[in-house]
Image (cartoon, rainbow, N blue to C red; front, side, top):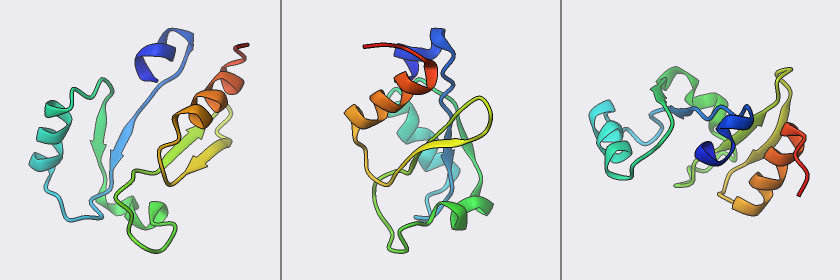
Length: 95
């Protein structure tokens, strides 16, 4: 998504919240091994903000925030088609 839509104004930022007790070095190695194309920041203080549903999930939380700071999409599992549709809507792109 980052590479597809960055020229249209999408900014992707990964936030590693440390909820699974990974070290920064472990997370950085994972990002390098999986060729992540967007920046990842480490912020263990925000873990509680992203801990919905209450049970721990191996899936990352996906939050799409528009240019006005309004949350336009929120998911606890990766649903590429839904996320893509939400991004296109926020960016004002037609199919």
